[in-house]
Length: 97
Image 1 (cartoon, one colour):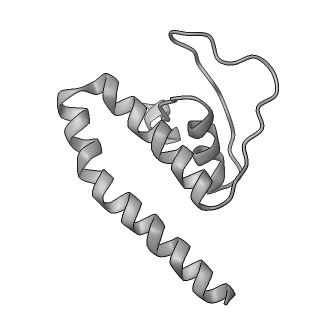
Image 2 (tube, helix red, strand yellow):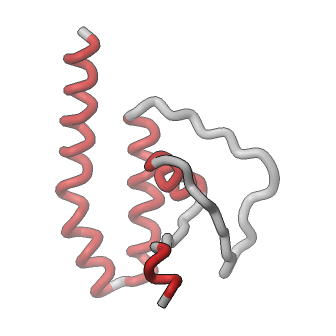
Image 3 (cartoon, rainbow, N blue to C red):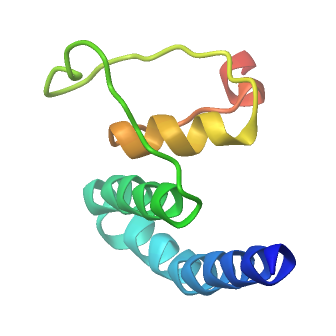
């Protein structure tokens, strides 16, 4: 039963992710502001799918530009941070240049 449930969650994840990949690319080309909101809502859906409950302590990010620096530990860090606020992530290699 566990294997079946894990397979169903994986299938749901793939069914959610694959159709949104070209949508995200189209948004990047035509509506850059809208392209930042799609990952936020996508990661919230991924958290719900995998049963991750978010608990935010402290004040929300202020409106406008804000720099968040984080040294993440696992792949879930990006999902969780993006689910909490519409963030853009920069890879370490991009920062070096």
